[in-house]
Length: 324
Ligand code: AVJ
Image 1 (cartoon, rainbow, N blue to C red):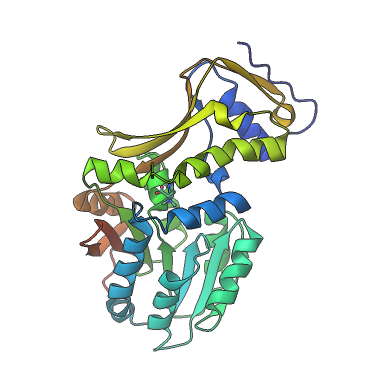
Image 2 (image 1 turned 90 degrees about the horizontal axis):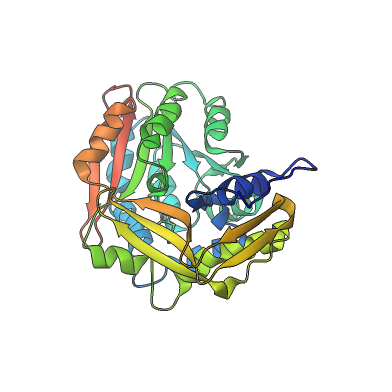
């Protein structure tokens, strides 16, 4: 009602999504992929070091422990395609395990050139790194078009990023990945598992406030890039566990009645005290559910490796039901 979308010029994708998410009478939302500007990427790296956020370390441990077996299961020469440009020890260990057989080509896919450059620096000692600056699905299309004869593709989708999708969108996304692969190609999928509620909520609301800073940075980014006038201290970070949907939801709650003007999105957004912007969902999984998700997407889940300290699974999916 009171928010007035006006589009004198073509809006950037960011401006368009901010307008769509905030100029509504219903639940306000912002897409979580906009967390990751330079500040947000640094804050996420800090989150992954917090004692309360065990997810990244668990992902890393399972990969260190399973990379050898993974390489044995895949046997034939492999090119690795990663959704998101992995850095550091996770991807390094996988490439290293695979490269004992034959030289490996590695295609990191990311929309951030900085992330891709960083990734090339860290991984070119174990693989030929071919960065692909594109969205995930476009990137997969491009990478598989460069496949050599008799070569198998291993796609990596780590860190439980799949958990940020709506549950109903997960099979659709994985089907689209599957459609670009051949029978016998593989997808290694990282999924955070459901655990005690207090552990989950603390992981997304750490006492040092790093996750709060990560969440609030989205408003600061709108101020920086779109000429917004958010007063950051007038919003509070919140993380709650939605039991029926089995997901952590992050919100930014308005501390008072206020109006926020965002120049480049062409809106003046009204907030009631207590109203929230829903910024992220992180779905949690059960092991059988991942096997069903795989089957619904045209994959066979042939192996699940689980971390005992922080329940997290690495799932090996094979396209088209072909045997490994
Ligand atoms: C990187 C998407 C897996 O959802 O747990 C961390 C992002 N959000 N703390 C997650 C995140 C809040 C993270 N992923």
